[in-house]
Length: 348
Image (tube, rainbow, N blue to C red; front, top):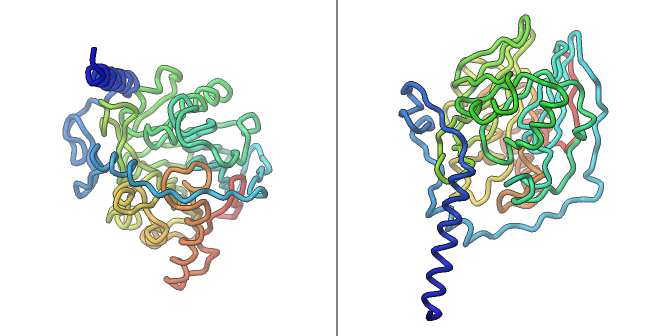
């Protein structure tokens, strides 16, 4: 056989293996009635905004100019762990990336728990962890609820989730379709649509909110399952967790329908280059706009500093956030980017 024949055969084998692996990794697909954001087979963003397709993904990978992350050695911090928060206080702890622990009214809720070494396949292949979690897995307080925003590997880490289920047996709340993947490991899974609500306990309601993003775990399940965030609605004030999202007018709608927010968690990382990341990840400038759209009294940044997913430097999101706040004449204390393990504890 000629060299060209061998080369073509090798390319064909690689393509076939990629297709087979992509098919095997694909998540089960949601099936349900057609809605304003579900066309019967795929979920869509408000305004028809699409995430980048394969051609742009290849362009991004081939033209990346990532800034090398310089993580300070003293950036490691472990939070003091409290088993429960009762009475008129709430406590919100930034664990890492999109993993945040909410404690209030005797309830412990954790979002998108990711404890893996890497944000990718099997927790091993993909962007490597640059900072340890602020609360080690074995030190988590009793977990009553888990919220899973969507099925990307940096948000739905099956290894971490299985350990939490085995240890705490929490109720899992997720967006439409992701329950099909999770029911194999837990019988306490409930999927909800944008604007649907679930009662957590007396006087506390979780309302699923829209985002602008996409979903997939393999090659054949693009946008087959939903993505989103939530608002915790209480008589003392509402708390917002935005999930993974690009910027859209729906943030103003969330503010109008469910604001003002007593506290908000808003993503600021993985935003460069804007031509590629703009549709799916808000920038620090846009994060400040979200803070204003939802009329948040106090906000905390997340989705930065742990996994290098884009081209900005390690502390660039923090510096850009501060610049955006200054440009809007807002106090830096109104919207803070903190290290893993930092917590906010306030009275309602």
